[in-house]
Image 1 (tube, rainbow, N blue to C red):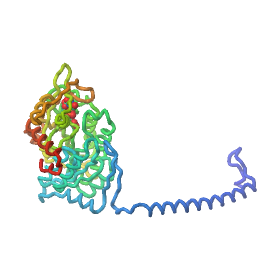
Image 2: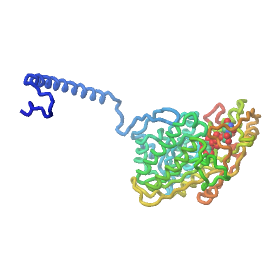
Image 3: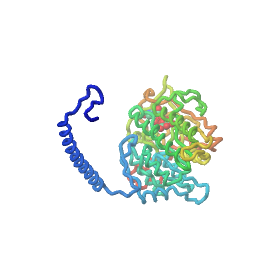
Image 4: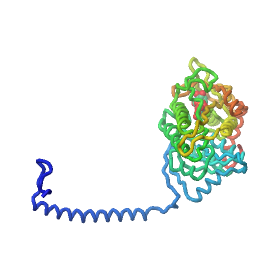
Length: 439
Ligand SMILES: O=C(O)[C@H]1O[C@H](OP(=O)(O)OP(=O)(O)OC[C@H]2O[C@@H](n3ccc(=O)[nH]c3=O)[C@H](O)[C@@H]2O)[C@H](O)[C@@H](O)[C@@H]1O
């Protein structure tokens, strides 16, 4: 019998009696297997019926934000209705844009969303409301947006299902991508959050955009920090950007390269905007002008950095309204993406612009203006510029943006800070409810 012949020399040849016992063992393991399968199936059925019943299109998602872990719920008929309604073009005209604004509850995101809505464009916001800075300020901005009919979806850039769903529900013509881990100095404390938002999140967004049909045109926020150690002034788009001084700058520069590959391979229309130290009402509390004002009002000491040999540190501070005009100019002049459903059909537009003010002001001068506006004397401590990513000065050449986008900054630091201080005093007075009246 074939069974009795070892197939390989030296292999064990079973006796008749052991075959009999093996059969018994086989039958008993068969019944054990049936029993375990039954128990396993019962457990599956139990879990299925015991789990919370969700609307078929509802998803409960755990998302990882850049600075904290958060949970957000999205999906369902009511949610989709709100998404559609918010994204609907309001002016009825054929030229209205349908824009997904990422980072909509951020500083620039809020202002750009409001400006688009005022024109009648369709706007849908996306924000993960992370706690890099006071989330209550982001919630207040969200309220402001909601009062103008803008729905801000709570979710993370890295949530592929959510982004795909948004593009299933709405055929966005444009994406204004402003969600990012910002701040130069924080990159030494939490480097991974920069990789998570500015690299992984960006790639996730681009993946969804390239597969969307139609593909949207993308305008996104790069940064003046990409010029890094460049010392040729004013900074022109043609200057070298391969010497970043911070991980933040490196992730923004990487973003410029990554967007280029998506433009090249998939035909996505891309416009990168290098913002120069944007300030104004509803600003970011992690920025110097903001926390200087806060600390000065509290009588706390502020630290003013100085460069080598006691040289002054300067920034090309740019007022938010000027930046908004630049963003809208970029959206309006963005050509259509050429691809569809992940396939390139032809060369697509790829642009990078400086959006600055063209007149650098020293940090000392910034403090002096704040002193006048706040009517307090600053308690200053002068320290050498730390080696934490800060660069000694920035200065934008905006010729290209002027020519292509009609960008023309018009607000000087004195005027812009006056508006910021007015908002700040109002917002942080005892009644935050009134805050939306100061815009
Ligand atoms: O232009 C940009 O692209 C960048 O502008 C800002 O970065 P930064 O210009 O460094 O703005 P602040 O952090 O507000 O610093 C402004 C100036 O104040 C100085 N500073 C900052 C903090 C401090 O305690 N003391 C002080 O003198 C800095 O050295 C810098 O010269 C933003 O924080 C970045 O997100 C943005 O990308």
